[in-house]
Length: 491
Image 1 (cartoon, rainbow, N blue to C red):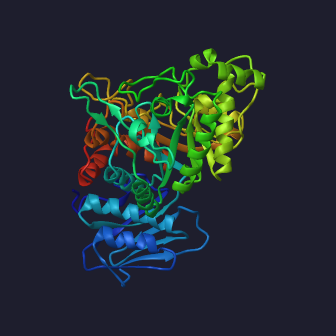
Image 2: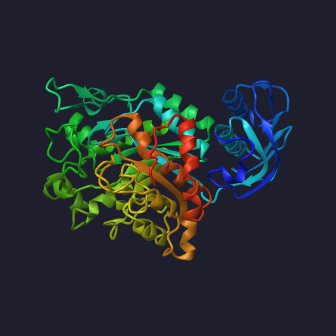
């Protein structure tokens, strides 16, 4: 905790604002102050009342409308007697509230006087949680969304289907609940099972919570690979007809969705229609990563499909599958996103131009996609965006497959130096990904996420020199303590 003699607002804020001017004095937050808001800021006004435990009516803190500002822009003025947040939208007002909250957490409610003018450089500032491999409670996901929004992140990519479990409820497909959602944990002698579907009520509740904090929940359904759980429930959707099982081990599996199955296409069409109705997001992530083509090469139905399409190689079937699923997403009124493998095998059939490419295998996929005219979301595993990787190259550190140091995250750039100037406008932003094969508890997830996610939040809000961000690490650790987060404390 900082004392009121030793700190300035400019020394405490992450993300670092676009403009900040330190001023003399302090504003003291206490339960007797009153908060008011002009029309249009009702949601953020209510959150401010809850966060600070204050009453409505007075103007000790005032959310004030100012025309002509950008969607997420805000102007914050803290004087000795009043706090004023100006914005054109509730979203902008909420970003200002987040800045106040961080100052309050660090200073014990003695807010240093200052003026802040702020707005983001990128529209997509997100994080992904894999809830297939290990499933996390709605309460924990709410906690993450609240903290992410505090650092101006605005996208929660929810990975909901994979080989180890299906989590989305769909009417008319009962085996998703009884088979696809559950796996036998073979390490236990009593053959106990793990996993379940999230209920529609839980999903709607989480979305409402996120919406109030201006975080968009983006669902992902994996196609055509990582489909073991689905095939276990409905083996007719696979090339061999099974039997298949919901996997209890990790990796890439040869059994994938059958590209020659019309029954599969009917299921996917219905699934995407229902997902589009359940989620308010304008986007649906359709997966597309790590899909072996071995089964397609030996499958009579897939070979028939190839002959019908005039294709000579099974790898070209993936671009056909991607295009078919994109058609379904379009029909449902949404826009598709896919992992960077969707760019492969597209020589004959191409890709829909509005497909957003999420570049995870380094920045190369994003570079190629932008050249082809696709919008891009960067999350390269080689540049600090994979948070299931270890914090440091040490046997004592938890983590899986690789290393993502604080230094790497601090040096991350949404726009690689090698990207052509005209392609840079195609970059929507970036996100950090947490795959959960080896992450079984919320405390483990927190340790791997923080403070790396906070550092990434800076670089997707308004990029800064790495040295300046790394110097903020002690402040981020203090924020983690104030937020009751289990965090990494090393360098």
